[in-house]
Image (cartoon, rainbow, N blue to C red; front, side, top):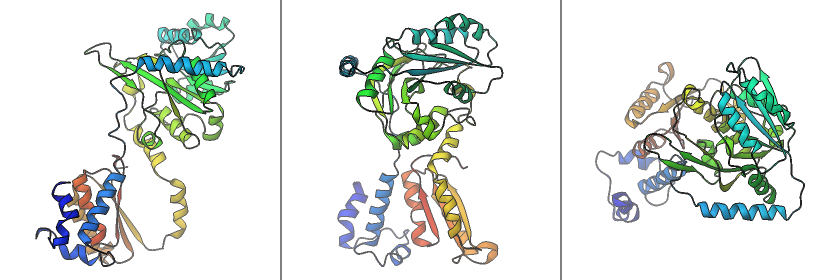
Length: 403
């Protein structure tokens, strides 16, 4: 652990003290109830906090390699296991939303028709197309499994998917976008997978291939981790199969969102059931293609912070806490950037002057939200509650917007 590790294990026992620039008295005075070395205990607790709030931003969403042989063996095994049960195949509802992607949606529909699994209902939702999409789909409706829902005015991907889900009759639901296709055995393997493992939500692997530039390749194949999912999405909506009953429990897509709509839904579903990864490739697409009709291009990046605000805050606890607040008290909230010195100076001024010059006292608290300073700056912020009992520092696991 370097100099800090040496101090924690050895140095403090010999009476070694930090430099003169460190206000030892301020930090020892408030540690009267601690047995042993005050500064060593502070350092240990702070180091533990850094570990607990590391978060999952370091976790790669894509892998550079994939074991194709193991995937083929997995598919054979799970299909054989499910066949041995002799069950009647459940109905799968597939929802495809589209807008002005005539050729793309026809290819997507073809990939559903080509599935080795045959018991499906396909609902295509035309969200106000003007390029003849609906007319191109009309001849395909001769297949009674295919349905078309026409929306005269575009309402966005969430409204389109919800319009399709309103017509869903299947025991399970899968989603496909109008610029993607499935591998032919996707539904067959996924049904076998969720049924043999009694899962309510399963997802497979996306292979990402950059068709232009340097031709890089990646595999979105991260095993399920709910804590990581709440921070960032690593599951493609188009490789998911879930019980339709989950929608009754957590609701459908949030129509107020214009981006990250599947991530929001998955977080809500993960609150009531665990997910599991099926280790086989379900789709291949170019994740780096910069087309203007893609949501990732034409909708705001900041929607991810809207979702974090929905799910990182315990809003029920906020409402419950209102009853316990004392009249006349003031809480000051500070969003800490990566400059602990500036935050410290602000806190010092607040607690020196108080509100309207009345002084800090018990009627004023300061809540510093560390979201997310570097570890060096974060450790400096942790000094504040020791110096000032009225200060709390809340270390977050990820970077958040000021709002």
